[in-house]
Image (cartoon, rainbow, N blue to C red; front, top):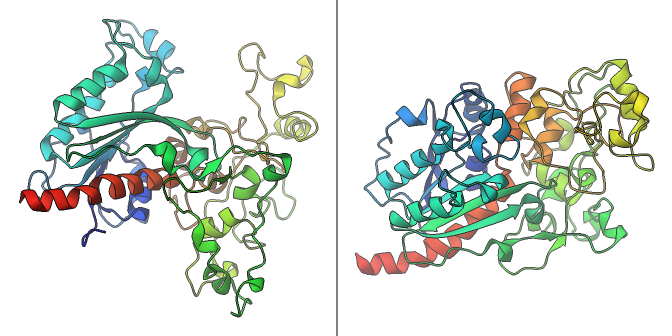
Length: 439
């Protein structure tokens, strides 16, 4: 283990999901940048280092107080709507522009500009799955073009599509990651670092109640502090290459101990500001993020608020559910709010026995694809955050629409922690003796 924390920066940082995961993996994040001004209150509320709001294309790399090559990691996810399977038609529809020539197509080049400037020991770049099928004007695979550019800067590169559910996140979210290093190490095989897997039986889909800790310790269990110190609780997350894998965390594991958002029976649903019960699953114990001397009853419940719904939507939501249907496409045509040939899953209730579908920024417009599994409403910001693996201590002190967008755009912190841990252990720490001898 290095005597000092490895140092990193986060480009296109948003609310700071990637920054949080790197912090949890043992990194000191020195700086972040994002163009969206509404992300700054959230980032500043949860991180101690500087975050700049600005256009990265017009921003010069700041002085970090390090010599060239001393920075350990440049990380970030350049927004590339041109690579998105959803965004192509929108860009193609603009006069004089297409998905090959749109200027946003090249934001990754600013990521590489920062890599070239700092010459970090390693980098981590995230992007959407659609990049895998994207081609440039010459018909070349975009992934190959970008990899060649990265290698021309002196880096060994590995490209891998990852599903966040395989790393403890209670959500299916597939994202492409470029991992590079210039210190002569083999980049980690992230399949080896997966901690979770598909369930093997129906029983493995049930909520994973945590065993009674009082059976395993002599400590006073009257408060959650005693629970938190139990050895079993500390095993999550446990990022160890080649370790045994647990069944995927589910929607039930993540959110079902949160209280209803209409505690007085109000219609439409509003918000709740106090926990009614403590954590019951392994994931919930982790996501509550309680200090050793803190009890869940003293914890403030933040951002547990959903948008308002009209009675028609609430009635439709009631039709969706376990034993009935999870998608609006199965409901009689006369009750369809959308064309089913175009939007077969526009209204979707989340299955409590599975990881959620991909949390998207579109949540800020409506929540129809993220209907609560047991209540007739869309999910709250806090529930979306839990499904993204933001812990309850991570707050979003912005308007609800901005909070939904920030959650949807984020890299899940748990997935970022897995990647950061793998890079730290297999690249940075393995390279230290070689770098010391070279000096």
